[in-house]
Length: 202
Image 1 (cartoon, rainbow, N blue to C red):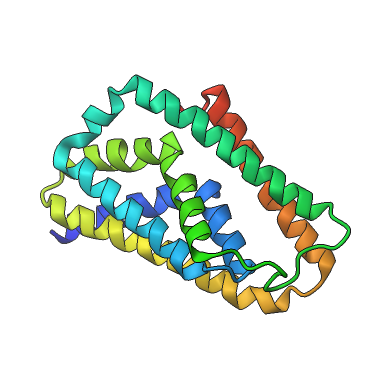
Image 2 (cartoon, rainbow, N blue to C red):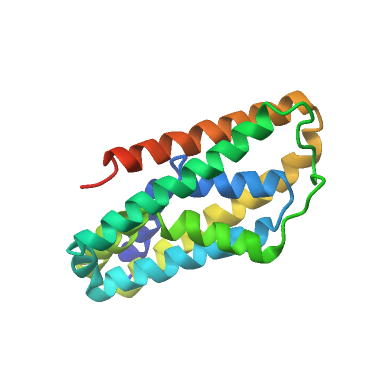
């Protein structure tokens, strides 16, 4: 059980720590102080659900749905490109966003955007349902693997939200905010391009 738990913890941590659309979005919401804990909770819960489905044996079934994956690929690329454009527009605006922002997004908007960033990215399914699911299914204790993976996901996303919340009041300079928005915009644009080009597909 403990070896399976450790495998789940380390493998999941290795997959999610790399900077991607999800991480950039959680960081952005945390820095802007816009429902960061809700966003982190949704990301972690989605990972928990998808890894669980994979461990239960649905990974192979998802991987065979070429049409569904293709729709998700283009929808995800379009949504991420839109988010990248918004971030880049903020970066080059005359009045850069400051801590807290003038316009506080509703929790419903934050929830919808988080679900889109998470569930419209085929890479999420490949990593959680297919890859982690396949590895977890052959562990001596699939449940232990699942618990370890879930702990890694929850720890990472909540830690990211907490770190962003700690950094936010210390980043009062408009120039710093422009650099943050520029970096986030470029990351999201890069992920959108990789999705559209098929580089993130098997």
